[in-house]
Length: 118
Image 1 (cartoon, rainbow, N blue to C red):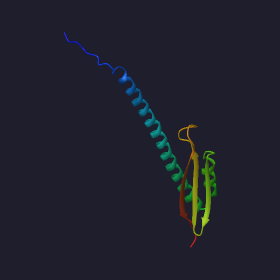
Image 2 (image 1 turned 180 degrees about the horizontal axis):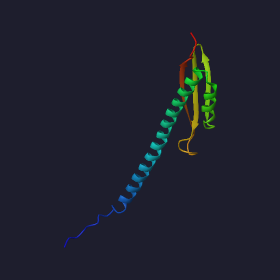
Image 3 (image 1 turned 60 degrees about the vertical axis):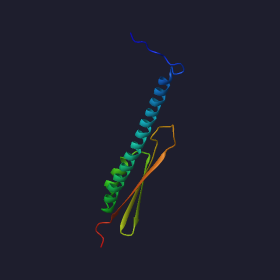
Image 4 (image 1 turned 135 degrees about the vertical axis):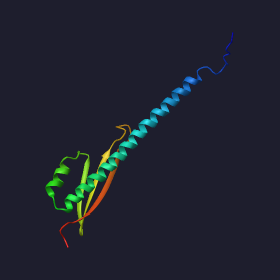
């Protein structure tokens, strides 16, 4: 018959270590999800800026109005003309972790040559 010895002073430590490990894993998952959300928002802003710049360079105001009308209220679009180029800036304030941490501003800019000009 085999006897097991319990070492004094070692009881309960495995549970505490597992609790801290679980907390660390949960925080890493939440941070990763927030960073993933930031990356997706940056890509979305860049795509939106490129599409609006192409339509504005073609002087298609109906398409620009349709695109900007479908955007959420948190998105700000700025369209400027600089010489023969149209410059579009899309800016969005997001809260990837809800109200726990401050908001971040994500911004993308795109340029397109105005069509039909010499």
